[in-house]
Length: 112
Length: 113
Image 1 (cartoon, rainbow over the protein chains, first blue to last red):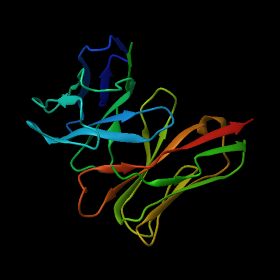
Image 2 (image 1 turned 60 degrees about the vertical axis):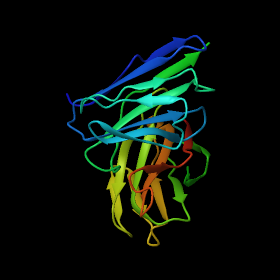
Image 3 (image 1 turned 90 degrees about the vertical axis):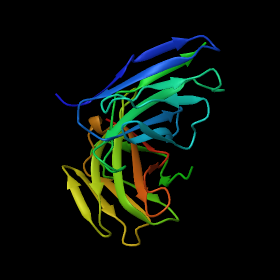
Image 4 (image 1 turned 60 degrees about the horizontal axis):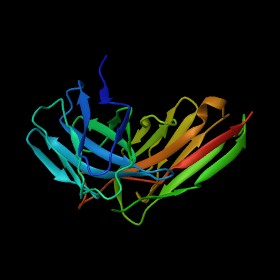
């Protein structure tokens, strides 16, 4: 089955630690995205990548970093510089441009 | 970043009722998308719209791309308990920022049996 996987579903970290969230897709999509969702809020774009080895900052990139070494994978690192990292993180992919993005199941990150 | 104005923010209805929600913006959009999100899950794409005036259905769901290109509407007919969730609109703007989707704040739908 084609789809997007994110792991783990729940993640707990101590304040000051970096943490990397995984996102893998087997849809052969070129573009991949990372969003952050806070309770009762919409989705805010962190980073996106339209092609391997290239990525751009979204609206709230500060305190985050990404890499796109393979077409299938787009990991997100939440660094200690992110002031309020506790949130629900969603990864998405699309075949080309931003249209019709398909989302993974999300990772809920809690920083203690 | 810009967000779309989505309304209402929440709805409480009886099972069997019809539902209407909308998204508006001051900018012109190329594409409108409607998603549904269940608690603790990722959003699922319901309907995609690509032309001004386009009316598209997916089962009991019907969505329209506004003729001004600045708004979109989603209707759900004869609601059932599994319709409960948060509905998001999203759009691709023309021109600057066209590489990204802009999302509404969501409409939370609650159904009383």
